[in-house]
Image 1 (cartoon, rainbow over the protein chains, first blue to last red):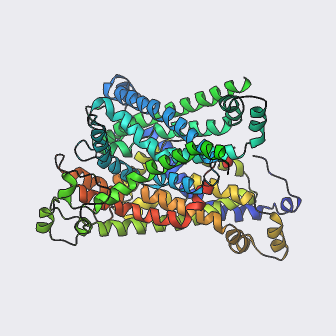
Image 2: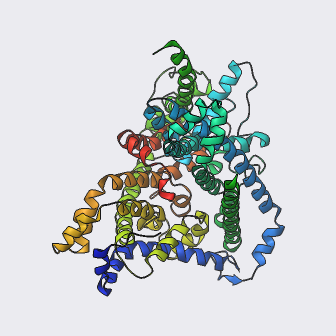
Image 3: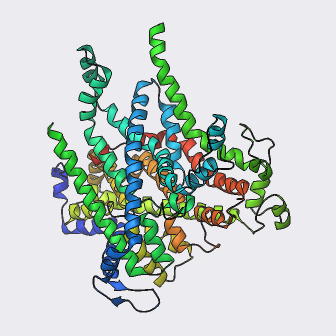
Length: 299
Length: 293
């Protein structure tokens, strides 16, 4: 983060200016320290304690982490979360890519771009309720459609096999337009001539896309995938409303596990320890992804 | 347009139509269900328009019908007062937006323009906070709010977002960096202080960025569920999203009160859609990744 060093501004650098600056950043710094920085450290400390909020917290070292390691419910939540991410990310990214290409392909895409952003603007709670209504086995319009086509109605959110893919599908619906817009912005930055030159040289559309557009789009896709993976691991609202972790724990994702332990079981230490593990997991996944994206750059 | 060109455009037109349908139809369907009498929802007639229109679902969730009539119409008979929750959501979202955008702007201005020791270090701390999953901060924040006696108060719901979010500071700093310095320098030479420059030059120039951020902040706050669920379950301060969750968990599994649920859902969508109609283009244009490059 280098700045243009500005002569006139360097002259103003006096101790008094630091005081002015302090006045400007004080409110936001206060918010940052009180609600971001301190809670993060406090969370780490709480994770080493046994605490039900009523008695005083008791320091128990790594006990919570050991217990988590042996807790099959925790491992289940980890597995279920991975399932969600594996369903959600590839489908969402590919669909968003296609939508972005369509947006580029039509002359005036403002109507499409506007409409595609609507699901992203809706509250997660609303999206979940909407999905419940549309996917309901008895009255849902999707199942009405399946019946009209002569197919059997499906229990999208009520069977263990379909619940997680359905949740992933619901959130894909919510985020595909938003993701497509980011990719579209990236596509706009690539001059069309580069691709057209390849087409004139006899490349097929698909080859031109794969060999030219896709590599140029790599930073955008890296950004999109890293941020949506980080978001995906934190899925909560949709699950809490649409399936409540069920049926039979099949959508019992990590945030749900943490939430239940903290605010229904009042095991603050245990829940916080799980949240810290989620944090480390995300840091690890983030690094891995960035390294993989870099490694691919040379080809 | 030649015939060949037209046919090559056809797949695009079809896909566009399909995409418009996929993203908008479910929203339409919620509104359609909210206007249908409960008995006709259950009978499952899938007509594009409701078999008969009714406003009773809305009257019910807004608490305008007595409970005996509500039961007859397919409700649970429980007293639901979405008017209150609607008010709470509007109040909380408005205050958070005004306060967060103002203080974040002040911070962003300092990070973009003022020189002080540790500036870039503090800023990169802000940015790294974007990576931390929100649940990690949520539990300690809950304890803090509880100890302050702010559980089930507006203050408790608003507190974590009132002064800043890393995103807001980041967004505005990015914009401020792009403002031409000459204007500020001219004002400085004329003897204007930093505060005057900020209020009289920076903020007015950035009005469109501030508006975009305000809309996004408002919608984010409006949509928030987990935090207000933890600290504001009490009916006095309950937000619309939390109320919808409670409503959903109270409806019987076998025969949910679909009409009521969908009326509540539509109420939660309306402000978002209104903002979208007015500011939609701005939001769409603000979505890109250039800021992170």
